[in-house]
Amino acid sequence: MSASAQGLIDFIAASPTPYHCVQEAVRRLTRAGWVEQDEALPFEAAPPGDRRFVRRGGTLVAWLAGTGAPAEAGFRVLGAHTDSPNFRIKPTPEYVSEGYVQWGIEVYGGVLLHTWLDRDLGISGRVSLRQGDGVQTRLVRVERPIARIPNLAIHLLQELLDNGFNPNKQKHLPPMVGLEGGLSDGPTALYRLLSAELDVDPKDILGHDLMLHDLQPPTLGGLNQEFVFAPRLDNQGCSYVALEALIAQQEPAASTSVIALYDHEECGSLSSVGADSSFLEMLLERMEAAHPAKASGGISRSACSSLMVSADMAHAVHPNYADRHDDNHKPRMNAGPVIKYNANNRYATTGVTAAWFAAACEAEGVAYQTFITRTDLRCGTTIGPMASARLGFPTVDIGYPMLSMHSVREQCGAHDVAPTARALGRILGGPKR
Image 1 (cartoon, rainbow, N blue to C red):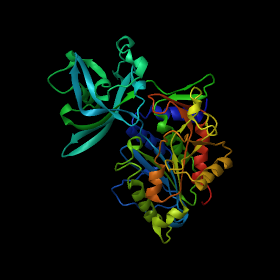
Image 2 (image 1 turned 180 degrees about the horizontal axis):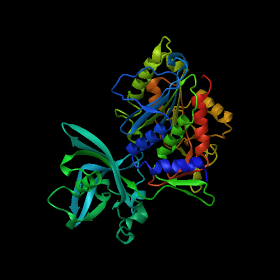
Image 3 (image 1 turned 135 degrees about the vertical axis):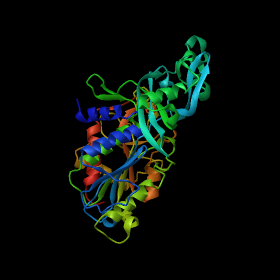
Image 4 (image 1 turned 180 degrees about the vertical axis):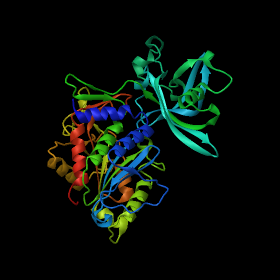
């Protein structure tokens, strides 16, 4: 069994939401010697080797201060995202239909809808509570089957055979959570559940950011345990290897090493903590100001010596749909990380940045692959182009191959995890660009 693959499984099992993903990353960073920086306070002087992190909601930025002045030595940034497509619970979700209690949901991101039906679903996220004159936010996770979205029998849906699965998201996707007889005139079933889990008065619940998650745990699979079967591989799979690469860095390099694990990639990244925000840019400015080594030009000059890796899971060739790939670009699971290209900048890779990642792979003895979407198919995108545009950092888009992307349950190669982490570690600790 691969220790890295088991580490990935444990990481995903602890992370049903972006908020829990950040919490688990913080647990691992703290154990490895990182210290939380209060974002609201001034950054104190940070000598080379200083290890800090900042978290805000489902986004985390952690860094290891380099030996060189950031204006001259630059930054090495590994970017990934913590969120995954799923179903989010509406602010006032509860209603009764035909004697069943149901919760209204919104579809977050590009969900493969049919994969969520007939699954045992728990509920998780964060709840905002009254605390004196202020608000306290706590994480919640109900790890038992609360909700289910049942399929309609094929006998009552003959058009499914002809037209495929095309539900009305408002009408056909709300889960059943109980029977009408379980209701009362007091708090809703949701608020009673939350108050019991958090041991608070339902009247003190002022808001929530809740989502459904599949209860089947991640696991190794395949004849020889060569696969990982898990939810949320896109993109906790790359969040994990970025985190592992940073933690494995024993000594500071000349450049300051940074990981940025963003929330909200799956819905466009346009938020206060998404990749299309100034969040990372502001933190880099504060890192540069706190570094004892100074050089003229500050963060603007650092772009000339910096490099960013946008790490997001890649499309493995599907043996049943091999024609959906370009003939010369068919990544296979367990054959190494993938460099992603797109001429229209849906990925941020250039020939130069691809060469830097290829060199890092070669230095670590890691095989690598390339991917480009068929010219007649639509290409997805990542945080790479927008983060690169905001910072002015040359960027390469990479990932490791997976199948079932955006399903409730996905699949990747167990033997791709460690090599990808090693290649990313080489980027963090490698020579000046």
